[in-house]
Length: 96
Image 1 (cartoon, rainbow, N blue to C red):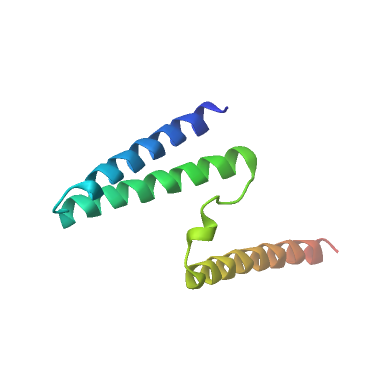
Image 2: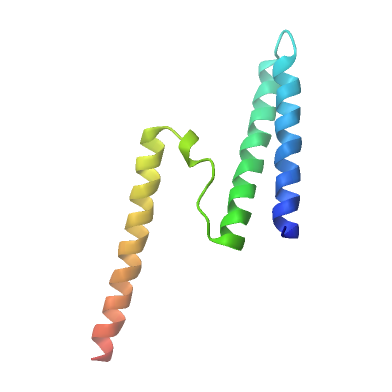
């Protein structure tokens, strides 16, 4: 396993374990819960970024996103691809 993927995975697991501990407290402190949730989100984002960079594989958590977020992300992806295509077409036309 890649060192970067392994490190990101360990950080994600640690964040999830901490999140579970915080959520198991009674009563749950909203402030602690928010911080723990943010750590999980940051760790998950870092993990998915490293995996994508190293393997080219998509976000393994995409199924957990709400439909509106998925549509938004797909729209952004398509807009970037269209922009890149337009740039490439413009350069090709300029060469002709």
